[in-house]
Image (cartoon, rainbow, N blue to C red; front, side, top):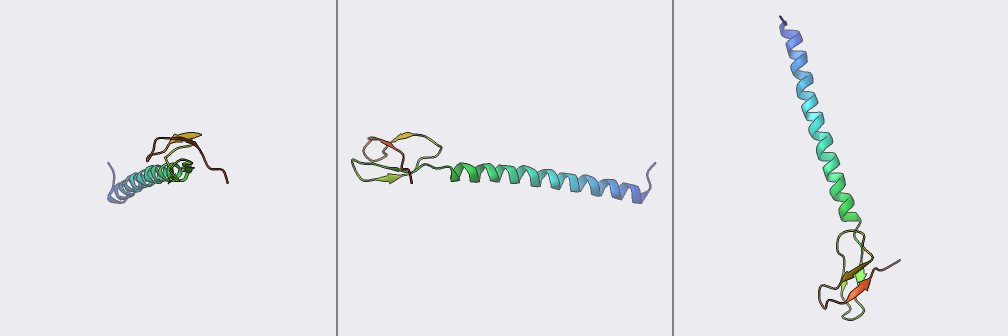
Length: 75
């Protein structure tokens, strides 16, 4: 049905497709993780002088030390 050359070419294309798919998947996953880490918001507690950075883009967060709600820092 297929000769050795055709089988080798088909096998090589399948292996290349698998590696390309894995590369695209892990690249997108790593990019999403990087963006989540980059989008941290920094807060400064006015009560206990703690600087903290919870994940995500939120307008207010509780201080991990004293529990006071603070607004985010704006530069």
